[in-house]
Length: 333
Image (cartoon, rainbow, N blue to C red; front, side, top):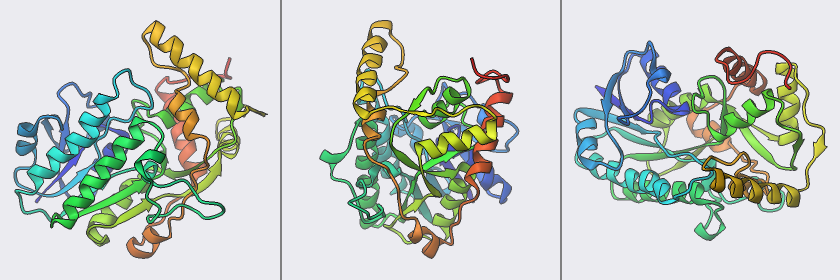
């Protein structure tokens, strides 16, 4: 039996593909025609070239498949043309759902995001029941993920055996691109983090996110959402932990949110003038207004999900980035 993984060259998708192969599964990896395969090096997978925006290529990818893990996404906090995010994340997901309705599937597991949750209310933690209204969502990436998640849940109500997982912020080795979170770690290692804002995230080892996907396929209830998270941490706590595992200094100055917003506006202005990505995406700063702390008890209770040490995961990430030259090995300049 064949298991299809979309986004198999991405951060989460590559770890998921590797885990499935280790478990003895026959894995088919759907990758875009121009994708680099570094993340799949040495892995016994059947690579199929295709694009979520091309339904014909998806029909070929799902042929003979019994289980689908849809981890592919366009994950950017800034883009000149936001339509690209919706074309891949929303319309691409709908195309994949359409072709999957025509085959006999055991499970369809969709990799959503903690970004689709409503921000915490007062002292309560966000959980699977705190779905954000579209007008509360900050930025096109988060909106596209919410719309795609809704499409998956509608398909589940129509009979597709679909389950949604909502990873928080994965960290660890193998973030080749890197993701926006990975860029924060790389900038820290390069000595570019001179201050922090008062915000917070939930971190989780990327290997545990992959394991959570498999648990969702095996034990999850159709039509349900499961947050795959680890430890709620302030940004200062994250930087302090990075300082411990890397031996490099953590920023000690707190930046007011207003100043961070101004920095984001200036950064995007220069990005448009110089035709490059902004160093400080404004969308990321706006997201920092709220500490995205979550309650992961549902996944623990229903899936038997557990996450490991964040400090060890950050240590693996730091070692991986340094070994591959994302940052210089010596003290930051």
